[in-house]
Image (cartoon, rainbow, N blue to C red; front, top):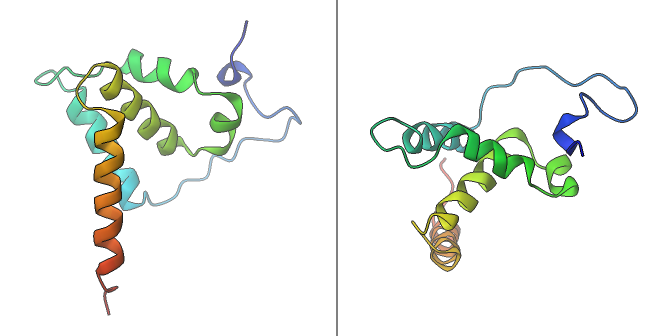
Length: 108
């Protein structure tokens, strides 16, 4: 059965937005993280594993997530699946970073 990613466009036949944008810092970091984890030196994640994770997202998440949100979710799922880190460790670190961010004043 075809997955959500196999449909070749939106159900209403509207064109896919192919406009480029300047990647945000978190998107650049997500790309760098994937390049590092999939490098021949590390070999932690293979591209086909990333694709498997992205293609297994439920349709609602797949539809609402941006390109790099899908990548980041897939990377998170893979490092948990491989036992590199636990979901609890990731959640704890995210909470720590959020708390730090709340205490840091914005730049002038």
